Length: 172
Image (tube, rainbow, N blue to C red; front, side, top):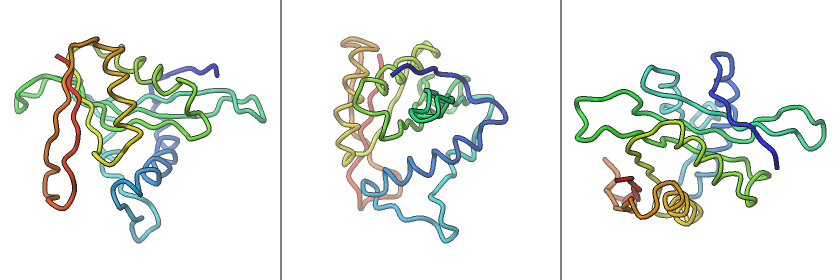
């Protein structure tokens, strides 16, 4: 599948918001997530975009029925400016999503690598323990991006003693 990765334009955040609902729906079985009373899923992370230390990307491909450009995924990255409160200056893949119909052909891997390559430096990629797709996807991406120069650790989810710790991949 041919596709193009572009920064989210000022007038395209509503597109990301629509895809965000699909992203959170996908995670619903992993995080036991229900929609809020208004029918939407949690979106506070998305609400923090755009910002000077954050960037978003959309992956676009021709729609299979119309040929028109269609959004097939998004990535949200934060930590693009130094933060004196953090112990290390790193970019964080805060959210990453590819629509189900565009998965399984390597597009997600190349999309993730494209986004990582746009922001040189140290990276952190967190994901939930019970997200089995992410647990196989992100280590492969890390190896391709950084070779053996990465680690995977687990960290407790703040305020959630009832869930397994998150996994964190960090480049070195």
